[in-house]
Figure 1 (cartoon, rainbow, N blue to C red):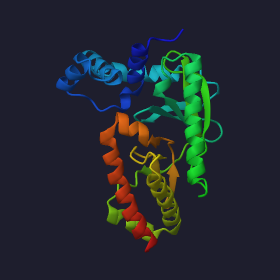
Figure 2: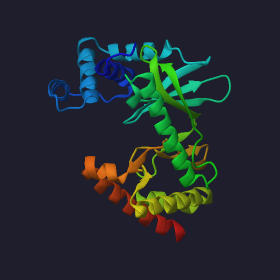
Figure 3: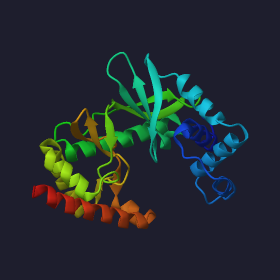
Figure 4: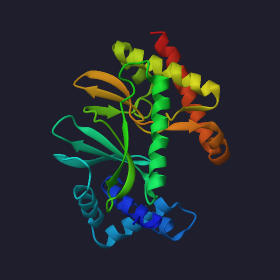
Length: 273
């Protein structure tokens, strides 16, 4: 039996609590009491209030949730690694290659049919992103999609598996100034070629005015430093549908435009190197 959606959201917030920024008392009260806040934000505030009464209680519960699981493999270990607006990411340390496991928040509390549809949705996104960027070897990380009994409480969830990328990971847009990024492109031919390809494909999608890769999400595009060897990786398969954004998130379109303008400028500088 699936948990009610609000209970699933609270459990998910507990799951991610070790990585969440701690809230002030005012923020906790504001998010908890006012119904116009999203369920997820209210759930985070509930967890924060519990931690106020029992320090680090949510951290201990989080570890209990994902350490005692029914994942369909015998992992050496599993650790919470990161989270985004729609996913919780775990590092699965197996006997072979390490994997990154993503659990999709949209699937929480859904029926099995609903969970399957969400898994299919992200698989279609992956196939679309691969069709856009698959011409650059290694740019798009391979992904397998599945439904599994995952935390919390072994309910069905939509998930994906991909190789875990070791090394120091940064976001080319959020962690670098234009001068810093261009300097790196000047010093590294492989990164320059990957970036030019990515920029050309992405600006082309923007000009089509229908869909494009989500380049606002932090580290959706990752710059990875592995012992001085750099590479670009597309680690997430978020896609912007401009019709949806125009109707539901009009303010986001301006943010996308600013990011695209910056990308176009960097693209021209990279071509001139």
